[in-house]
Length: 139
Picture 1 (cartoon, rainbow, N blue to C red):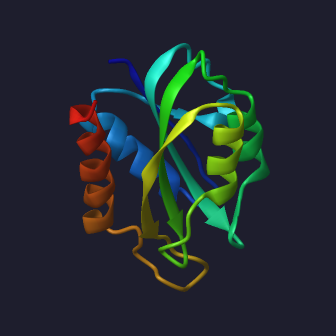
Picture 2: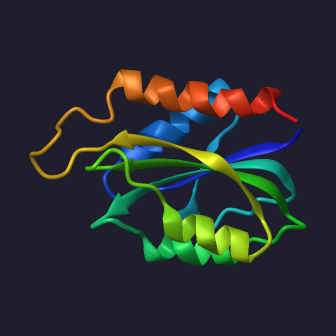
């Protein structure tokens, strides 16, 4: 199985999470800002944050450029100050392109200004890694 990890970050949270996932999978985390060439991937881990309850427009632009011939399945990992919000617009964009998206999504708290400093913490990052690794043993 061929895997890849991509992320988009404004605060550094998503990079921290994506790097931990990539390291656990012996991969490199690819920054969407660099417009990485993904190639054909069986499982694409997409790590992003929500800002004002919304996905970054650059994230949406990136996923709208993916095709089901290129990406068999996507897994979403999200950080937000709320800690439980999901990347609904990213999921919708992927599904509208015909890309299968795992129904489960890992969500963790991220800090915002002076609120929730220290998040995502090591426990939340390890949770994202464990969640991601669980997809390696699925069909």
